[in-house]
Length: 279
Ligand SMILES: [Fe+2]
Image (tube, rainbow, N blue to C red; front, side, top):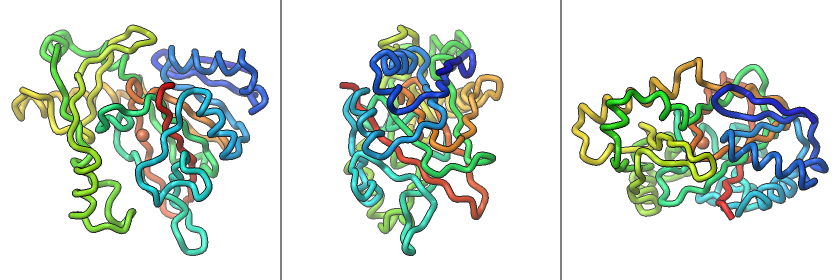
């Protein structure tokens, strides 16, 4: 087994690890410790059945079934199938999720603490996933913005972005909005939060999942979202995950920004996702 830091800012990569290794307490504890310290863990090329992925997730916390029942794995509620593939002329899963920088499920009052992805069928020269550390974003905030943001509340919402559109779930836009608003009324989170494991401050705010910072005027809001975009997307601070078959990724949803990149036409891709609430 080999282990290395992926960037100075986030991520630990494990290679040469099997499910049997992951079942050993010392390897599993090392993985969880790396996740807590470095926000993102990559295990390269590990063969996992859906049962084994859920088993692993259940040792980290409590797997949470995906809200839209249509896109759950046919046999396993805990697994969301993210796919652009078709089987028997039907979509295998939900396509085009997360194609914008975000922190997972921040529109929830209490987002599950971790996300786990397993690369079931992944292209290697496209469809990368990009990551940035929200702690590192805080560290790079100009002093005047730290002052301006102190004690501020962010208003998070899912209804602002429509990328999971009616074509994906068979609903009209009005029905989708009603569903989204009923299931996800806008929620409040402090803009600056502190990570319970590392004690580091981090920025909890992403343009696509937020209306505004409470009390900011439109100019302040626009400037704030522009600043967050600039800091998050700085190429020198972004980790680009170039998938290899059967990669397993786990990240902390609050302290990790990420985005899925677009796929060229004709390229198929399927990953299995499990949301995990802290035990
Ligand atoms: Fe995501």
